[in-house]
Image (cartoon, rainbow, N blue to C red; front, side, top):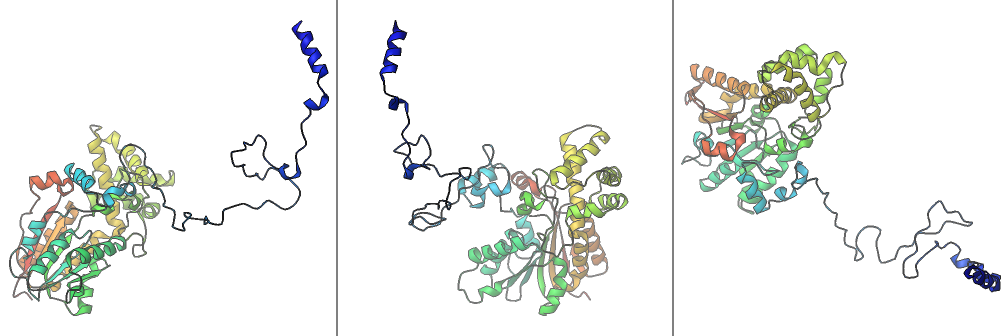
Length: 435
């Protein structure tokens, strides 16, 4: 019965009730199912029509890039994965010097990103002859590795409290020396003070050129205090893009001059051309590596395997090689081996031992009579060279005294700054009547 009634109603309705009205010419290209209160979607390239393409519509008051008022649009920071940032570039609060964040980082015994904590600064100032009196117009201090400027800050404070003097800061890293120069001048040299530009001179060169630099300025034999902190700066270690750490992914670079052309090749380029026999020798001489031969053969493998291109790839390859050779598969022991391998390669890439030997050979002519030299070393290869040079200079009468025993950081400093644990301080004083 119900179906019959429905049939009667349908038959009774006119045919126009089931037809769809033809679109007007203006709405022919409007997207279907558009809501009257919403903006229509832009016609995509897949829709075809006759005539030229429709122009994109943009309000005249809104610029192509930026806000409606003409100001640049603020770029949003790239979010990092997890609760805390891991990569150097992601630690924006530490870079900005957020007081609370920096305090928490220091309490954990870590170094805030983009900074460096100077090691044994009080001991350095004492052995440089800058802790007490004796600072005057003729005082000339050289910091061979300016870095973040931690030790240099103490030196400039001492010079400001005395009767004058100058500081020359050397550093081969073009990225860091410019920032450190600006930082030191802003914080420690009073703006507009008479002769303030002469108090600090920064030189973007390897310290191996110090002797030639002083000869060009007529200051050979005038340096009263010289400091050479031979360790890597925290800014270089923490920045995974520099390739100095295997704890985070980064290119296998390791060039201290940031690849500005003064260093011939990166760590990857070195491994690509070196022979296993030469790599084995390099590992033995630069880091006293026990498994130098096995690591060299495993890394290069006669060209059968690709050379690692990143720090993490290098670490994994070394881990595969040394694990079967160790008595115990302890992570700490394996990581120490990886660190020694990277240290040996880094020393070769940057010519660190050659630069150190050049400085030690030039040191007697650099120092003024009675001048002091302080070296901070971080592994046996550096310490052996400094000890041998000071000992030979003492025997020949060049140095009137030297450190027969090394000075080490105290327990509190090692706890607050774990990176200071392997540091050794050696010093020497040039004889007054040395030839």
